[in-house]
Structures are given as structure tokens and as C-alpha cells.
Length: 541
Ligand code: N01
Image 1 (cartoon, helix red, strand yellow):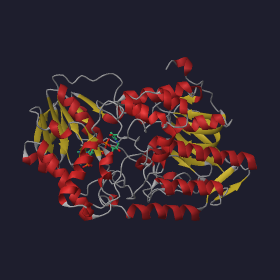
Image 2 (cartoon, protein in one colour):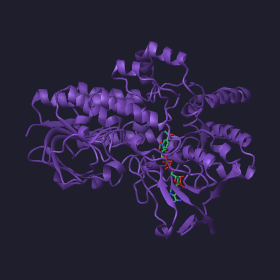
Image 3 (cartoon, helix red, strand yellow):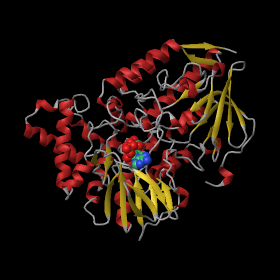
Image 4 (cartoon, helix red, strand yellow):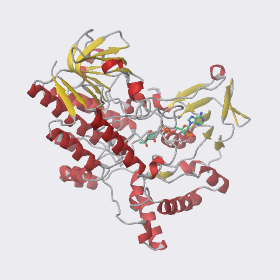
């Protein structure tokens, strides 16, 4: 992006909407508002579009939703013309796609890059938001729209002695644009979440030695990534609309074969054959092998037994198998989809360091000390995750009616109406985040659904001469209870994970995304629109 192409910065500007975040969600929202004739300014801290795909440039970064589905469907021309090369797209390819979309729909002229939104305050007299940036600007807008992502507030633990470490440190979630050279280096990776699982095997191919510091193991299934064949692409594109419609009708808004059978409907041999089939399909669809893996403890244990038998086939050292086996439900955390993760531990230059005891105690000038042992390292990589779901919202000082802040409002966990609106914060829309399917659905499809919903809502406001919309406290309480009910019905609330916020000390435990299913969620949103917002108060100031 050249500087000339960046939107001109006009301090004190006034817009119909200020949108935060230039990922899939914010970009689509901007497109919708422009189509409808609203004025909008989109603000992003990055120097280019892409959101999560702008920042997460670590080796091996790749999506775990199939590329033919992890893409926009609002433009038939776009989806027909864009060529994905692999079943699961890599970060560079996804970023190139998002840049293409921004260019194709001429979005960048309304985007202000290299600017972080620091605060937003609702003015009850004017019904407008004032959005303050780290450039000292105050942008005024009727609507304040957050498209800030679910996994975009990175976290990094701090260790004693960090400043004395003479080597290089990196963080997967804010990876440099320039390639990092690991040749001949002793590399330490802290964490074994999806980021480390993707990065580790590739770094191990290059580095002299890789130490993986694992506090809690994760279940990993093979992604079975491969190049897309011209035939399968042609097949989908021959009826892309029909393909998308089938995905839309599914529980997670992405299409994969789900068997509507219990683990216990099959004999042990048939069950194993079914699991084998799904292992070969790989990735998140592995969970579709049976309908009760995430809902029944015994079915879940059968899945764990199968998984373990496969890992035992891969890893030579049985002690490592024990160390890499989680002691929680399968699929409770987000299932990790990897390539060569377990195989990596058969390499002579990879060491798994179990840090469940005293942990990583400190950094030293030449590396780090963990569990009482000093490790000499040239490079240390933090793959330590995010303040997920709410962190990207609460790191902004958002103040609603009566001086209430979002931090106060969400102190005991996120409270929303349909995930989209927050009582006490009129004219603010929080897209594809806590309280909606978001991370449990295809994020791009979720971005389009929310973008269309907000667009229609703003149309209605304009047509009826209303200027302020706010969800009622009753509607918010009912929806927040529904989000909790749906979470409690799933095994996914049982373990510690970023879904429930337990990776952040002091954060209230709450299963943040809505797990009640995509079709019922969309039906609720559509009913609200059809009722002309019966669960909201609309007024004019
Ligand atoms: O982060 P994580 P992530 N000492 O939170 C460890 C999406 N994503 O970036 O579990 C030692 O999963 C921590 O240990 P513990 C995807 O949804 C998708 O990898 O707290 N270890 C854990 O092992 C994913 O679920 C893809 O005990 C420490 C790790 O750091 C989500 O993003 C790719 C520590 C953090 O794992 C987050 O994944 C990448 C300490 N002091 C990400 N502090 C795709 O495949 C933390 N840890 C699409």
C-alpha cells in the first residue's frame, strides 16, 4: 500500500459510522455501508488490511476452515474468479485475498491505517459517539461499529530476567514481515496451542534444535491439507450458491459430512473404521464422525482412545505419548489441526520440555531456566495466545450511558443482545464476537451475516427518522442466559480454555461464543429485524 492510497486524515471528522478493524468483518461492514450511501471511516492499527491475517505471519500460519468456504460469498464474480490453491489456505494466500477484496471494492479510500482506537464515548445529548485515536484525533459518528476480532488481543507472559536475554524474541501473533532465519539456531517455543503446533514442525526443519515448552498438552489431528484439484474447484463453482446454502444450513455454517449417529450405534470394528475415515478427512471435520463426541462423556472417551492409538503409531517414544496426552475431554478446547506435529518429536533436534511443575522460572542472558534446568537458546518464541473474545473490545476505553464503561459492564463476563448490541451502549454494534457463534462458525460467513443485519438496522433507522437504538436490559438478560444455557449443554465448558477466559488471570469465567447453532442464531437475528427491533428502544434526539 502506498502512502498516497491511504485515506487522508481529517481531525474532528464526522461520519455516519466509525468502524474499528480492517479484517473480514470490518471490511464487509464498510462495503455494506457504502452501498447503502452511509459515510464511514474504518480505523485499524495495522499498516494494511487483513486483521488477524495481517499480524499472524509466523511460519506455517494457515486457516483450519477450508478455503472454498473461508471466503466471501456476497459477490458471485469474486468467488468465481478467485483461485484458492490449497484445501486450507496459508496466511500469505488469505492476506493476498483480503488485499484483493479491498482493492476490488475500492475500500481503502475510507480506511485509516496505522491508527489505534483508544477510547469511544457515547454522548447522550447528541446520540453520537466520539472515537479517540492514538493520533490525537476525535472522530464523531452516529454509530460505533466494532469488527475487532475474537483472537486479536495478544498476550505474553513476562518473566524475570527478560531484559537480560541477549538473543532474539518473537511472538507468533505479531510476527515481523521480514522472514526470520532459524538456520543453526537453538530455538525455544513457549506454548503448544494452534500457533505453536503450526510453527514448530517448520521451524524444526531449519533450526539446529527446537525446545517446545509445554504446560498443558492439546489434542491435535492431522489437517490432511493438500492442493485443491481443478475438478473439485470446478464442481463447487458450478453451483457455488447451492454449496454455500448447504453450508449455511449446518450448525457451524461450514460444510462437512456429519454423521447423525452415536458412537454406540456401531460395533467396535465399525466404530474404528468410521474414526479412520474421519482421521483421513482430518481437521475440524474429524468431530463429525459421531454426533455425541461433544455431548456424552463415554462417546468422548471412545474418541480419546482412538486418538491415542493413532498417536502411539506416530511417536516412537511411549513416554512422549504420555506427556503429549491431554487429561481433558476431546474437543473441549478448540481442536488443533496440524501437519507433522507429532512426527516432529521423532526428530533428534526436537525436545519436549514438560513445564507443568515449577514452569519457566526465568530468562537468563543465554536462554531460560525451566523446571530447574538452564537451556541455552538463540531465539525464544512466545506462542502464548490471546485475551480472546472480549480482550480486543475491553482494551478500548468504551464509555456508554451514565458513564458506565465496557470494563464495568462485562466485569462478570460478556452481556449482549444477540452478540451484536449491549444495553447501556446505544448505537454500538459489536460484530462477530462474544454472544454470537463467531469462532464456532465460519468467521467470514458470520461477518457477512452481521454486516447485512447492521446494514438493515441502519436503513430502518434512517427510514423511520430514528437516531438512537439500544437493546433493552430484559432482552440482553434473556440472550445472555441463552448463551450460558447453550454453553452448559456442551462439554466445552468443562475445561480451561480461552473460550471460557481461563487463560487470563482474574477474568470472569464464561463461555463467550454462542454454541446453540448457526441456523437458530440466524433465525433469532432475522426475527428481530422482521419485528422492527421489538427488543430494542428506538428514539430520536
Ligand atoms: O494460543 P493458545 P494460540 N508458560 O491459547 C501456553 C486460533 N488459531 O495462539 O494451556 C508456559 O491456544 C499455554 O499453556 P496453558 C485457534 O482458534 C487458529 O496457539 O495455558 N506456557 C498454551 O499452550 C486457537 O485455539 C489457528 O497451560 C504458557 C499456549 O501458551 C487460538 O487461535 C492457528 C505460558 C497458548 O495457546 C489460540 O491459539 C493459530 C507460560 N507462562 C491460532 N503462558 C488455525 O489453525 C501461556 N502458555 C486456524
